[in-house]
Image (cartoon, rainbow, N blue to C red; front, side, top):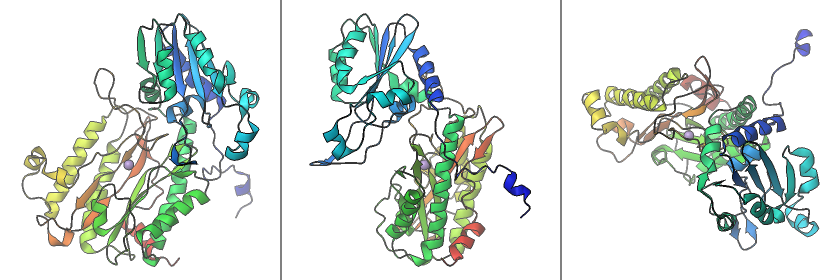
Length: 446
Ligand SMILES: [Mn+2]
């Protein structure tokens, strides 16, 4: 290798340590603070610990909206905005340092350390929240909080407000902001995808040596954790043969059958950002003729839809086109019979393609961002949005209306797409999806 190569700074998302800067969090708070009505208080709560049983808890995961505004990962925390006529202040409440609590549950940042790290106007102990809130709410006309939360603290917040003119849902403001991803958010998504890529490629290589679906699930989730992903972004689906025709199949406990396909819908979460990838791969290295026919049809549709993505296009247009193309494909394979237009009108294709073409993705796998404006109009695609494109076709083994050779085949192909100024970027194009590529990986001896 020429010596010069070592001098060039190589961009390697897999090695890069990406974080969202405090400056960016400050910007988000400023944007939200400006949107609030004069004389208002906005309250954002951290997620609460969920008990699994007795004194055992589920792994804690911060509330996405709270995390988006604060970057704070601990529980027992609140972020509030106190707005006067024009100016506003932000206060963070965090759990106090407590030796006994910390012995069992781990170290807390505490107020002093949090003050060094978080750019808010002041930080107090969580226990001081009730009193501070009551003081700040005097003379305020509007209270913002997340209507979706059912915390004891929310009830207390409503009890301690008098003469308030309106309660507003803060979640919808934040979720609208979350629609457009910043550069650092996109880097985190790319990082999540780079780990998920390794996991899917490992599954392709391990399929023919594996006996059960859960073994492939274990291989996939091993790669997630091994590479620093906190967890999966959703429960992995590893569905062999006809199991793929159950859309939310998560048992993953069936034996892998030679000659069948395995639908794998799995993606990791890295530093709170999701990836969401589906590949449909063969158990023993190769696709049969019938499997190839269906696979190529779905892949063709997926590519066509991705090619449509650019600013100002509507998701509903992508949906419509995907239904037309899949319906056409089903007719050409003899799965449906008749005129495409009539079949679409009768929704005949919905039996085999019952779901949406894709969804927003970000802090949550199904990112909780709006699809419509408040006036009901659809939100068009804009640069910085990230959505999945995942056409699928599900041909149940017991369906006697379809040609025998296709019964029991379920195929979905899903990628994560960033809308750019010029069009779009397929962030997961690095994950094998052409039959040739998958077959090559599946046939390797690992
Ligand atoms: Mn998805």
